[in-house]
Length: 466
Ligand code: GLC
Image 1: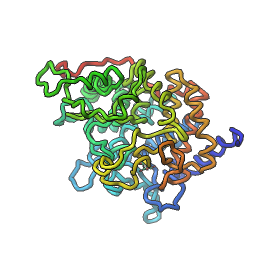
Image 2: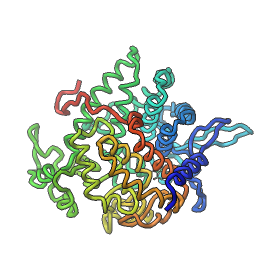
Image 3: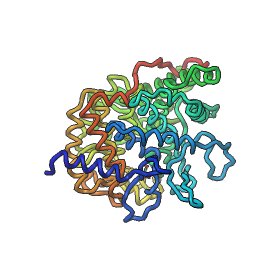
Image 4: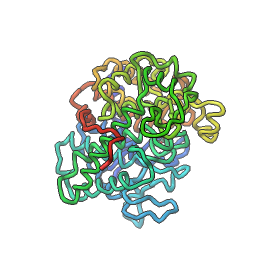
């Protein structure tokens, strides 16, 4: 065993090695320092990956890099009206960016998904940017940073994207497959949990930062209404525990009209075999997706843990989510914390849903692989729910192994015992996730960077929308 201080010093050094400089200033972190498997876009700074770096830096007392990142990504925010053909719509923020030298001058070039494998849309970037903005303001007390006219305009552009008139009846956001951390086909199109919880973070943050100006008035009202409906919808319809499972099991179907109990016409036959005994008394979680005639019963860790940190999960629901993780330790944490999603899609389901994607074969990568970057979320959620020892145990499993294995991107196998087949080493958010987790566990005050108030005006979606 290596002494604890050694691995954390090594982690901090590895994080510092990943810093990207632009015109002399630190602006971000590279996705991975390992180019042995081909660079692809791992030399870019990804917005979602930097959220984890930002929390590591802020909890280490470093704020400058986070400020520069926020400013530069705001400059990269798309200002064009979409003309179609792989162009980002107005308000979108890039999935990633890198520094290039053009005619002797350093420039930032961004990828809005138009270069990404399979041309996936980075819906989550705007939400992570807002999450980082709030954490920065909390860490520094510089509220004036968020009140600058350019930042206020950036927030309005994001809200234009999310609150626009649309076909959908639900208060959740409708997105294409692979539009967030899971950026490949995985059956996470429609209304995936991760996006919905990030959307709630964005609405809560906008509510906090939008100044009461005449220009913002309509946005402030729209944010308040949508947040209330969204949180109600998630708490009510995405929530699954034994009681609700039994309700679904006995559902009547084909109900019409206002009094329908089975509002989404879910067929009880969709309940997967693994679930009936898996969900014990006192356990519960938010399902992965909900739509007309559709529940995705898989457990998605990021969405569930973020829900604990926001207004989405009630105190009781937060407790039940942590119970689920504790009771299913050998499946969700096992040899490496923790599963991105559980269980894996296998056989014909894997073929149909992923398009026979070999990178997402069962118990690998996004499809049931283990991602240590999630440690920061586990630690923060554990701190909020008073379950610190649970996260301490998980971090103890990860710490020595991550250092010895050189900070892999992900692990494969039912128990996460193998370094992922195509995992990069020196993956920055693995390093940052572990470092931030340690800091969240060591100092409860850091929770304020990321924690949101649960008490918001929740309103039923069946009430007339003003
Ligand atoms: C992979 C992951 C994505 C991450 C990127 C950079 O594409 O799926 O979530 O942002 O690598 O680490």
